[in-house]
Image (tube, rainbow, N blue to C red; front, side):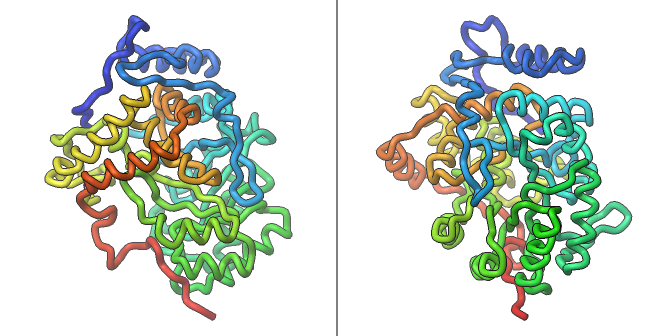
Length: 390
């Protein structure tokens, strides 16, 4: 991935951002305790116009996803083994996950489909020493053959089989939060929710969630067995949940977990109008990241960047803080394979936005609308699907 737009160098630290990354990487390679690595990263100091505050106290202020209590920011672990190359390597990702624990993160997101399977193994190994201190979310809902995803499958017998595999790979006796990864249109959601309810009663699952469901499916699922969390793409750049889904969550007491909370990296300032994604990068298939649209969307990023400078934080921190300011039951899960970016992301927990600032942000963003949809073909998308009725 090209980094045509790089953050300013840290001021008053005597090191560039690359130096900071090198320090962290050297410490990781030397098996230095990750708490030490994290403490060597910028804490409340100026990074150009940005402050990276990483106080564990801020992170440990919990939020609720239904009845599940977790840290205010979680860690999405997908990029350890899926979609965004290059992958970091097993030991490096284990070190990043453990660094997150030391900084107060208690919520970790994975799925059998990330790899497939290897992501759960990495997360399970990383979190084994902390099992009683953290909550792990994973997902079912796809079929696999010869290591490749072959389609959706949420038949009850397949769900039970998937859960047994996840328990084994995660090295746990119970899954804290189990999502249906995508709605299977051929299986009534009542059958899915009822199967998860049976797994809860059997002591193998604690909480039930859905990812990218249709609104009617969400209501029907919750009527069968309470849904603790919905996980949809949501960011300053992708606002589709602000229709029915967030309203239903608020009405029914369901928590919300935004995936892609920094616009798949765009909102961090890592990319410029000349960025081109390779064929092996998932973003190359997303219309809003096509060359002409990337150029047009720099105006949108300009608004985000100016607000971040005004608040004295990085664009990524501002974007995460905006999400958390929307509702107290929203818990973003930014993903990273890098200890510096981990520290940066967690610093968003210390950022506060007033009601007046939120109103003005909305006005400013309206002047620079995002160009290009988030999916290449809305007619074939797996998002917002409604399950068939019995």
